Image (cartoon, rainbow, N blue to C red; front, top):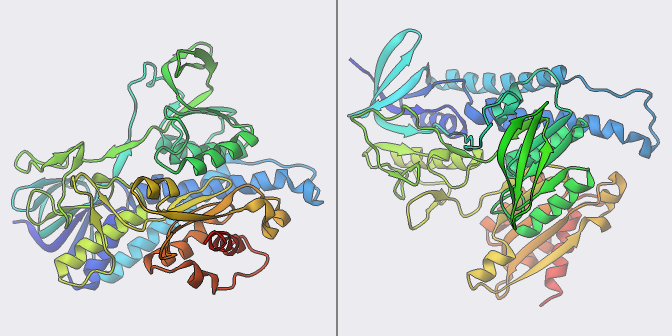
Length: 471
């Protein structure tokens, strides 16, 4: 007989473990099933390991430049294996903390491959054999997996996915070609450029970072080029060959083509929902454009079976998955919702109205709300406040003078509706802007708060003043 639970969560990433902890807080008997490692992609193969390597590589970059500040170092080097050990320690510490919280909350953690059967029964296959569990409710939070484009030669040795590249413990990346200029691509470009690799990014779209604001993307491209990272936009790789080392044939929009030595290659062209083997023959859930279809409550076509995070969402971010998981558990437990979620009319994916989007390049990029272009396209009258970081005191002191702060206000009410920040600590600063948008603060209300001098956040005050001068 199948073991019974109030809630079974499939997938132990941010969406899954957040949902499980919230369910246990509400007194629901909860189990979490994970095929690989506790923490999911974010903890083991994404957010945490990449940020650990970004931190380590940036320290090395800073040491290379310290002579400009009057600090002399006779010899500077890096040990990639030790950097990887630092990354592994960060991952293990984070993972151990999740397990501690599970144990304290009485959440049962089950390792194995889950397949959903009828009547909300879950079959789990692992080293011990086959076991069955049944839940009053099920949340699918299995995340996404890397997409490998069908490029001839993409299976050659030396062609990596981001997960495989993160697992490398020996250094042979003097030259790295990155196919794809999205978030994963530009963050890896930052890491390996800091470690003295010759980095090239090849992006199919007209600018880096896909759907992100073009002004932000252009500012990043300018910063990357300044660091001697080569960027090709409106270009794609038609084939990869091994000619005394990997070579890419690159096709540029307009008919131009050229061949380039590639060194090692990172495929960073996107991710797709991880649902392989998830659904049994007796549980054919409705799909929509490759994702699990959900209604406004995140319920799939099967009553009592919900889906959150990258298997349904158009915004593949850990904090989005966590917010969605919390929302579903609040519904199951009959509790009031702490955050308002919206589903786009097509029902194809779920989006949040106020989602901070952070990219850990140098300089950092953080956005929230809507851009000036999006506001005008929807018929909203807005005005923007702008401030260049070249005039910011903290930027001058730290010699980090790239970037800007741009704030978007609705013209009639003066309410802030969007913010785009490109500068050091942008990913920390964006929290203030998200709170301001969530609470409908006006330019006048925002200007009442003092921001210390010298700080990067002073730029927010100056951008507010710039917007108010336009009234």
